Image (cartoon, rainbow, N blue to C red; front, side, top):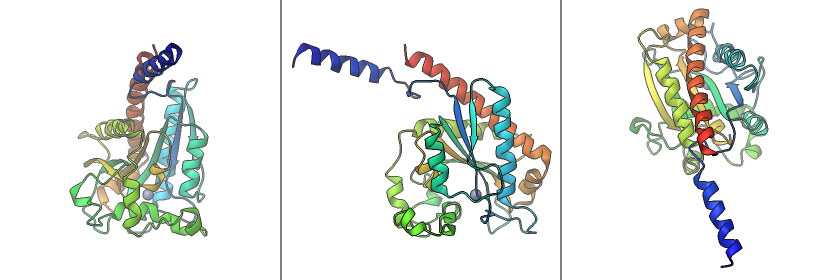
Amino acid sequence: MPMRKVFSFFFAALILSSYSLFGDGHVLDCVVIDPGHGGKDPGAVSKDKKTREKDLVLKIATLIGNKIKEGYSDSVKVYYTRESDVFVPLQDRADFANGKKADLFISVHINASYKTAPSGHSAHVLGASSNPERDLVAGNLDVCKMENSVITLEDDYHTKYEGFNPDDDASYIFMTLMQGAYYEQSIYFAALVENSLSDNEGPIKVRRGVEQNPFYVLWKTAMPSVLLELGFISNASDLGSLRSEQGREDIAERVYTAFREYKSNYDESMKYGNQ
Ligand SMILES: [Zn+2]
């Protein structure tokens, strides 16, 4: 092998090895916040029909975004996949975030159950289901199906999503093969959010933890991506917090705290990663 070639290999290896966990070469300066649902898709609805997921997540997402804008007015750009009550297809949400070359994608949702007992907050990253009770093979994909089923509201979903059927378990199998390049970073942010939301004073009491799930919108984004389920609309205690302005403010503040820690670690890691 000619010497010049040896050197270029050597330098390529050096550059690659200097990449850290957050190795894409710059500080965190762009976030896309994704309020789930909207328009003709209300998301989950409270039992008394008075509260809809699409309205709650728009409010909470806006609070989170405002906090980031205030805290990092010069250094972080914040974009939303929607800023009003409009329907935005899942693919468009991912395309939007990819177009902005965002460093972090935060999808905001509220959970729901047919029963009134389940409650709590959880953070989801793309992957095969990590919880044995939510085993893919067993077909316990209720949350994912609920969040992904919005695809069927799109007129042309059969062609647009290339055979992806949100109701068919088999459609999820191939997604799980795509563990993704941003897995560790996504898990890290998800864990920070869960920690931040979890204490006795928290507005949403139960910690459900970090889970891996095949959410379509996470699959299609080319950056660390986390989907937050901030309480259950079907649970009286969670709903009480979500309906209260103070409760939403508290939730947003806790997500923002997690964001600050994530950014600080991300930027620090960049500093050493590129020396
Ligand atoms: Zn949702």
